[in-house]
Amino acid sequence: MFPSDFAWGAATAAYQIEGGWQADGKGPSIWDTFCHEEGRVQTGDVACNSYELWEKDLQCIRQLGLTHYRLSLSWARLLPDGTTGNVNQKGVQYYNKVIDDLLAWEISPMVTLYHFDLPQALQDRGGWKASCIAGLFDSYARFCFQTFGDRVKLWLTINEPYVCAKLGHEDGVHAPGLKEPGTAAYVVGHNMLRAHARAWHSYNSLYRLKQGGAVSLALNSDWFEPLRPNHDADVAAVDRSLAFTLGWFAWPLFVTGDYPHTMRAAIGAQNKKLGYDGNPRLPTFSKDEPPVLGTADFFALNYYTSRKVKHGCVSELGMCMKRDREAEEVLDPDWSICGAPWLAVVPGGLRKLLNYIKDTFRNPVVYITENGFCQAGPLVMEDAQRGHFYKETIQEVEKAIGEDGVDVRGYFVWSLIDNFEWADGFDLRFGLFHVDFSHVERRRTIYRSGLEYARIISKYKELASK
Ligand code: GBH
Image 1 (tube, protein in one colour):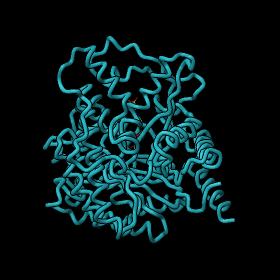
Image 2: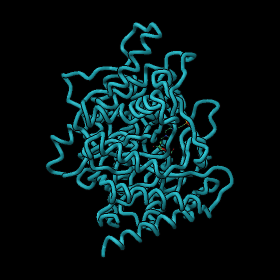
Image 3: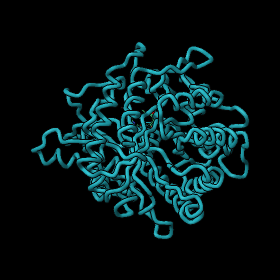
Image 4: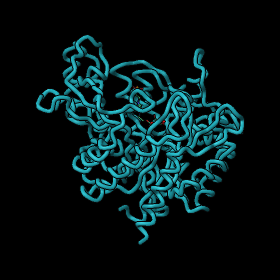
C-alpha cells in the first residue's frame, strides 16, 4: 500500500528532450559544444523537440495518470550567458507554460535546476572547477525561485554531482570532456556541494516562508555487495564503493558536514604510495562559508543497478579515482543485463539501498527521483520484460515502506519519453513512450511497459482512496 499523497512520476532533462538548441535567444551549453566537436555524430540539437512539442509531452503525462512530473530547466535558455544580467524572456515563457499546464491538470512539477548542461559562457570562465561557480549558481537558483517558486514546491539543485564530476572531468565521456584523473573530479564535486549549499541557504532565508517548498539534490548510487561475504577485504571494498559514490555527497549533507573518513583515508593512502606531494586532492570545507550539513530537505535518489565488488588490485594504474577506490566491480551472472551493458537488472538492490540510506543518513524523507530500464537494438513495443521490471521494483519500494519503515514519498521512472541518452545518443531507449526520431513530428507512442506503469499507478491510487 502506498499513501494517497504518494508521488507517482516520470522524469526528463532539458538537453535530452528539448532541442531548440539556439531557438529564441538560448545560449549554448557545454553539451552543445561537446556534441558539435568533430567526430561526434549525434547531438541534442533537435532531440524530442519538446521545446516546440511540449503539448505532446503533456498528453503522455496525462495518459499515464502521473501525479508528478520531473523536468529540468536549461540554464542557458533562461540566462544565455549564465548570469542574471541578461534574461531570455522567451525561455521564461516556455517554462511558465510548462509549469502552468501541469498545474492546470493537477500535476505537480519537480524541477531540477541543473542536469549536466552548464552555459558555455561559464565553462569559459573555468566551469565547475572554478570556485566562483558557487556564487554564479546561487544567483541562477535565486532567479528560478523568484520566477517559478510561487508554483514549484519541489526543487532539485543539481542532478548527480557524481556523474558531472567523474564522467565530465575524470573520464571525459560527458561534457566538458576533461580527462584529469584523480584531481578535477574532487574539485568539481566540492564546488557542486558549495553551490548547492548556497542555493539551499538562499531558499531557506529568502523564499521558504513565502513559498513553502523543499530543496534537495539528486544523488545516484548503485547498491554494492561483497563478492565473497567472508572476505574482510571485499567487505571493506564495499564500504569504499559506497563512500566514493553516495557517501561522497551524502556524508557532508546528512552526517558530518565533511567527506567520509573512508574516502579521505583511501585518497591519503594512495597519495603516499604514489609519492604525490601536491595538494591533498580532496578539498576541505571552509568555515567561512555557509555550512553544507543540513542543506537537503529530503533525500533524492537515482537508483538503476547493483554490483558485487572485490578488493581491487590497482597498482598498475596511475593516479585516478578508480585507484583511490581500490574496488573492482563484478557482475553477478545471475543478473540479467538490459539494453545498456552497465545496467544489470536488480530490483531487490533498491530495497537494500533504501534501508542503508535510512540507517546511515538519519532516516530522511526519500524520493526515488530516477529508476529505469532501457532497450537497445531493434525496437520492441511489446516490452513485457520491462513492464515486469517496473512492477517488481515498485513492489520492492512497497516493502521498504511497509516492512522496513523507510520514509519513501515518491517514485519517478526515467524516463517519460525516449531521448538523447548522453554519450549513447539515441541508441538507448529509456522512455515509457517511444519517440520516432526519423520524422520531424517526433511521434510519441506508448510502450506496453508504459501501459503497465499506468495500470500500476491507477491500481495503487484506487487502493489508497479506499
Ligand atoms: C542518469 O544517470 C541520468 O541522470 C540521466 O540523465 C540518464 O539519462 C539516465 O541516468 C540513464 O542513463 O557507461 O559504464 O561508464 C544514471 C547514472 C552513471 C548510469 C554513469 C550510467 C555509466 C556507466 N549513470 N553510468 S559506463
